[in-house]
Length: 73
Image (tube, rainbow, N blue to C red; front, side):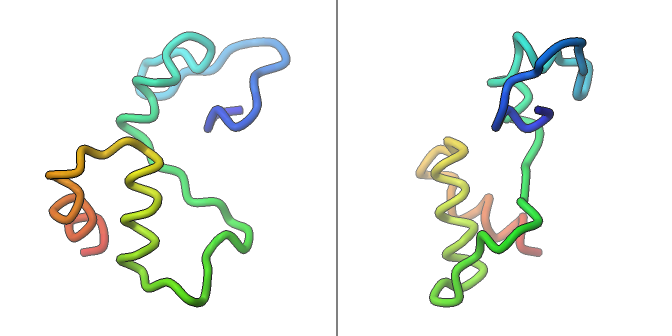
């Protein structure tokens, strides 16, 4: 529920002061999620995974390489 993969059933939660029910887009800009199950593919490098997940998250194309390098460091 905190990641937005499934919606909250009841109650509320905040991340960085943002409400998960109404401000999920803003939360996704400040929080990254790496699932703890087998979501990585053996055929991809760490950089290729970062590029893919960055694109899913909406990182601007011109900033993609810089952002991926910073995150991997």
